[in-house]
Image 1: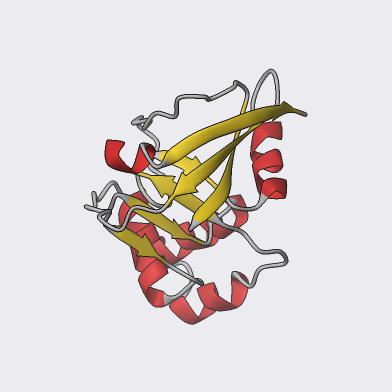
Image 2: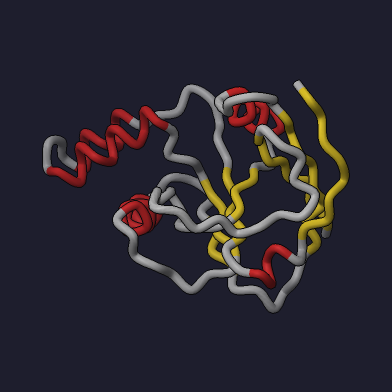
Length: 152
């Protein structure tokens, strides 16, 4: 099955690359996309300079090690906390809800003990759906085929 995914940026990204920098993200280092075009547009609009949405077809590869969170769960929360703290994982692809800036504030409050786990779950009820999929390895990147880009 082929899936369409989007990447919001300030440049055309015809050849995706795994970015490793000092900033830990929800699912670790990698190339982040979403299956929600509107969300990719929001990501693109946060960049300096141009706002560009890149579109890819993602081909299924059953040999890849994939972790999929279909909703925010205890396991999702622990995975995000671990990745944000720099703990590495061995997945080729990780997919699931996104801890946006507001949600991340609640994750930090939970990690520091400022709020309980029950309070965290009450605070993170989404007003709109989010989705992210990170391609963490070169084998995962090879499943992406560039379809084009749109300048916003």
